[in-house]
Length: 223
Image 1 (cartoon, rainbow, N blue to C red):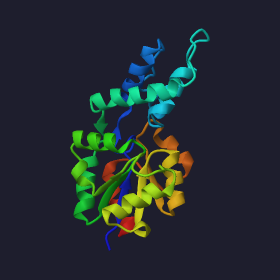
Image 2 (spheres, rainbow, N blue to C red):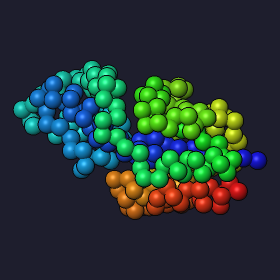
Image 3 (tube, helix red, strand yellow):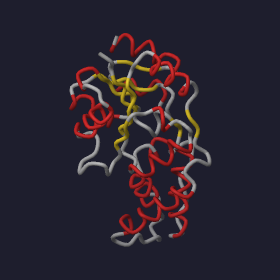
């Protein structure tokens, strides 16, 4: 029986930090706030839009008054800015396309489970030219819940035609580790994100040093 490889998107398939932070900075600047750094604040970017806004607010000087409700007001503006410039700086990590092809050639099912809104995830994957590699996609707003709740993971597998018992998750954050644990599956974390090998502190079942190593890992875990 074929196995299923479930991919996170931001920080796993592609380095999206530059465009995410640019969208946050566009909104923060409207309030006269200093922006985030695309390199130093990359981990914040992968934690989501609201996390970026809260980081920007927290760095405001005492003289800058952040009104109640600012986050709820600014978040839709951030999403609009991001949608309009979603793939300016974003790049696939090296080896992604070859790894996806190799997995498919081996008969594995590929699917995406991300906490990026579904519409934005669809658009980004198409901009990057790899949407057709995946049989399904579950975003943050596809279901009433998001990762680390296991329901989006399971739905991503089921919609793709796979079996959760013969699947694993490739991700880059503690959210992915918690999601895999809740779903009762194994998880591998990429070692080429902002934290590098330091992400091994989360004790995943495996670390992926390069996408070239993914087909072999899938063979070991899925056959």
